[in-house]
Length: 336
Ligand code: AHM
Ligand code: MG
Image 1 (cartoon, protein in one colour):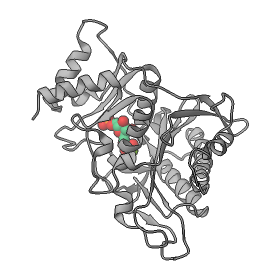
Image 2 (tube, rainbow, N blue to C red; image 1 turned 180 degrees about the vertical axis):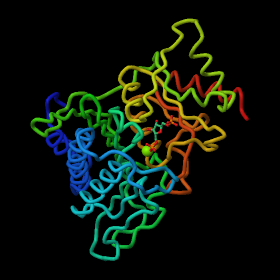
Image 3 (tube, rainbow, N blue to C red; image 1 turned 90 degrees about the vertical axis):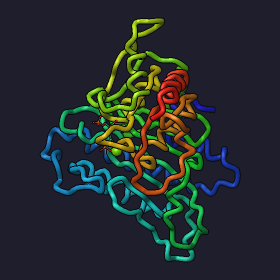
């Protein structure tokens, strides 16, 4: 039973019993993530103090400039997880390919793979706006003790064992699910401990907030344009309020607490959408559904999409149940 003020460490141990015959591997992995998150949080919080922001000069696989903090977060999560020898593979939004861990070793019995977006919304770092980390955990589908394969990572989101995010905001929170509801922990920076501050988070079924980059409006599919006009209409409880931070984790987190919808549709500049199925949409969709919300690409459930590539992008519509259902209604009425 979740108790307010319980620490994340206590909560993880207590809830390990939810998984019969659990070996404690998932608990150890969650512990590694909570540790790496504290290290990254410390660095994010002093980003304005030192010359750490700005492009590192590298370009990631999507052709975007990497910032130094992205590189730092990527290295920290990968190293913390690798050092503890608790997974057989890691895929990161910042890496071209997945990383196999000790998988040549036949004695290597680790069964989980983790997929991570180490620092999402990184264009916001320079301007003191919140950013986030997103993670997704699967059980491998190939036999333990053999090298991990692409298919261990290219699983439908519905197969996720756990997913979560860290939002480095006005306070830093870690929110995650293991398929038994969603719980949020707030970091007490003085003590370095995470406390259960938001037990069993639930999306309100309806909301008053829509979050979309309206600069792309002219380029959106007709169904999305019509839905945006619906959000703005003076009728019933509308117009809704528009709120867009440009950090998925922060926009999602606010909408989950207050009720709302987040949309990143396709457009001619992003013909398949912008957000990545494996690193962003799947974990956020798992959390959304566990919190009684919905996540779709406008037509189908995100968690049912069969991934074909590590860095695949999809259109994303996610939030309060009734709002997502309404947006899908518009998408279906104006199929292209
Ligand atoms: P990133 O992974 O390069 O940081 O991009 C993902 C971010 C999301 O956090 C955010 O919701 C979206 O991109 C914002 O995109 P845009 O600036 O096109 O509105
Ligand atoms: Mg990202």
